[in-house]
Amino acid sequence: MNIEERSAGDVTVLDLKGRMTMGEGDELLKDKINSLILQGRRKLVLNLAEVPYIDSAGLGEIVRTYTTVGRQGGSLKLANLTKRITDLLSITKLLTVFETYDSEEDAVRSFASTSD
Image (cartoon, rainbow, N blue to C red):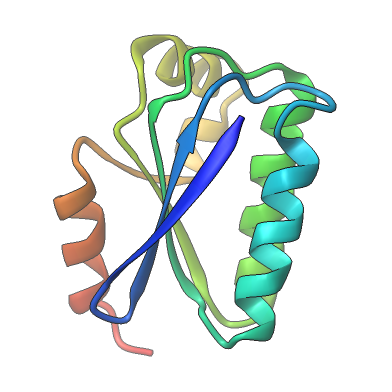
């Protein structure tokens, strides 16, 4: 898996590409999020459009990321979920935990309607 970082105003968008499985993306995401938090970047969007598969370790890492960002006073939103990922979040009841958006634009725009 690889992660590309972009900025949309004061929102950081992370494009995740590839399978998110134990040893194949979970540690990469953890390191990237920790780095962003240290830089004071706390408005994050995970673009999952090019993630074909997430296993339990990958899902656990997304939950950990959500918790870490939240504890730092930030916000993590998910965008462009595939049907498989939507189904996974639905089965695990995590769909009610995360803020999910059909497009990256909607996710980025949602930060404008919330105050810091």
